[in-house]
Length: 209
Image (cartoon, rainbow, N blue to C red):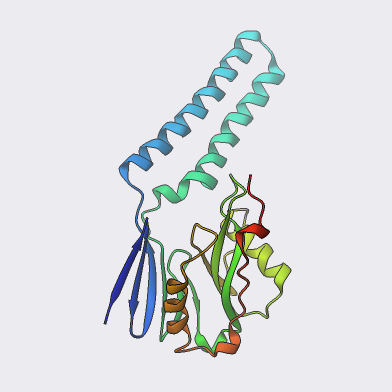
């Protein structure tokens, strides 16, 4: 039996032996918006560079030249490169283990030390909003270490991608209890309940801008 639940851009597919989370690819509109943003910032840098050249200031020319190159590269790589990546995000949990196809990470059930849900994780580096994440780890649980690792992973702050932890952020700080129940039921088919270490706190404990 297969059950499919769609929540915005996220698609949850539940079967008798596991579940799969996929993310819809970005629309043409989203791609065009990203291109326009890149072009806008590039134009601003080029305009500043042109003014520096007209003014004849060698120092400003060098500064704006480096700023132009570095700014565009950083904007594309850290903010917009996932938009143009045709590889779909897919997190699969089944009898084989946990597979993150986006980063080609895989954890066997016999290697799993703990798993669970943690909320209050940074949504992304451009805001201070929080989200709830599911994680699967092959290392012992450490509250500070795990929270920091999830912040770095999901805020895009140069997070390492290793097979020690696979995680996914749901884009909101609370998750429907029925959805959590369905996810847990599939995980419990292969992992002991004692391995679950979750930290789901009420929104009132988190400060929003």
